[in-house]
Image (cartoon, rainbow, N blue to C red):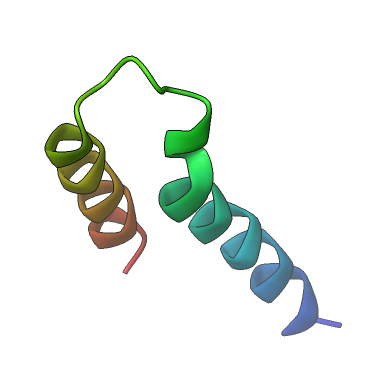
Length: 44
């Protein structure tokens, strides 16, 4: 259980980092890529 909970939160966080751009369609793709990488970098 100690391992499962952080993995669930990590998965949710990474899902937002990679697929969150679908919610922000008004941003150019290059900005979305940089923001996604920054979110992923912050997690790791």
